Image (cartoon, rainbow, N blue to C red; front, side, top):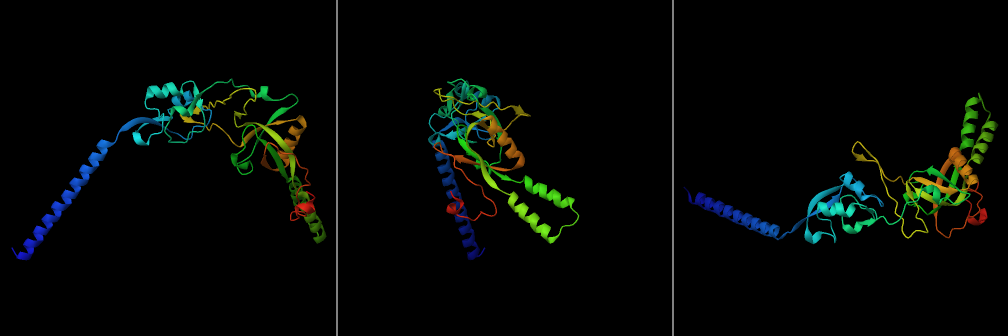
Length: 291
């Protein structure tokens, strides 16, 4: 065996011994660190966010609290650590606020139901009615409207356009002058304007606004279960409004005749008279519009 070969073999042996020593050292360090870890049983949210007011018994029955183990130094205070504690904490209580998916459940997230839930009909003032409308997130202020807020209703009328389109289809031929007249009529038929302002919101989805005379009112969400999966509990695009009979008629006509947008207004909002926006005044300034 040559000298060079012998040197190479010795070098390989030394490298192997060094690698083994490093691996052994790292393994010992990892074992020591794991020995220092103190794990504790906790429960995490499963199946999506738990909405405010959700009954704890509903969470238990749907098995939306899943057992897990976490290192104690990273746990929040009052983390629920056993099935017995979980059952005792959630039974007869509701979520004090939204609890995001995969969050660790704590005792502070649940409060007792201390006030009776009044039917919606008992919250409607004399001479008023409740009417429900539906809008998407864009036209409905991105879901920021809550029970107790006030809103304005804007409509862009489109019914004249549909009527003009029908007239065009029904006609055989149109002269250039008739086409220009038709175009003018089309442009004049489009207008965006406030229809109603300062309407009180009684409820969003199934969440009713708080009773001003009660110390605390919690809305309980009891979504049904179909096929083992929870149905969406709150529809933020469904609003129930407090209106007069005449306002109810205006709302029905508005939603039947055009495209509707909502605006959210502050508590001290005062309705403002407007003339609406058409193609002719779209680019006018506020002074030119007389506002």
